[in-house]
Amino acid sequence: MSFKGVVTVIRIPFLILALILGILGAAVAWYESRLFGSPFNPGYAALATFGLLVAHAAVNIFNDYFDARSGLDYKTRRTPFSGGSGAAPEGLLTVSEVLWLGIICLLILIPIAVFFVLKSGWMLLPLLVLAALLIIFYTPVILKMGYPEWSAGLGLGILPVMGAYFVHTGAYSASSFIASMPSFFLVHNLLLLNEFPDAQADVTVGRRTLPIVAGKKKAAYFFSLVTLLVYFWVVWAVIRHYMPVFTLVSLVTLPLAFQVIKGSFRYDERGTFLKAMGQNVLLVLLTQALIAAGYILSGIFLK
Image (cartoon, rainbow, N blue to C red; front, top):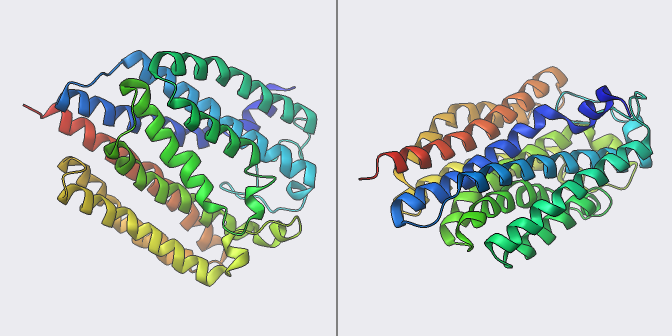
């Protein structure tokens, strides 16, 4: 098992998303600790974020394992944002080594999960079980269901933010769910746009993603709607006092969102579409980081 192969299959740049999700969940908990005096533990925040990084790596690894085993990775024309890591097709790792690496990630997660369940409460367990099921069944099952994009929004959006919040408070809250919804929309769309270049190859292994089921043009319209929902959600939540006012700083990414929306309809122009995919990654990461910053700023300026 080569070091280069491990780094490749984990797809370290992709893990920035998990880092931001951990920070966002912690930021919501910290803001509420300042507002209501609820618990907040910096050590828990660091450990939960580490767990999210390992869990995201596991998602990437298992996706590569199932795609290599099905032969999809040998048919897909990879881009910097889609088509797998290429670790197995390029001979950096064997398919069995990819599987074992994924299992190792799950084994690392077990003691972290047990610790938080014991420290923060048993109600965390259903969230962790659901997250584990999404990791394991995403590629072999969910991607063949006709609308798999929801699972990315749930597994790498709602669940991480609410879990990162729960470890401090020992409870779920409407506020943490509302804070997690922009992540749901953004990560849902991260997967959706990245599916466009893979559609032709995905059909050969029975995948039923939205660009396949609905067609790319309709998928682009749906992508556009969900992108705009991010900003409507933040504005609505601030007006209703469900999110602090400083989270409106996330609206500065709206011009970038319009560029990505425009690019999503250029799916037949590879160069232009690859640029849109790159801009979408920036949109996803920056918007969530700004929402987290909004919670932190709001906490700082509380009297």
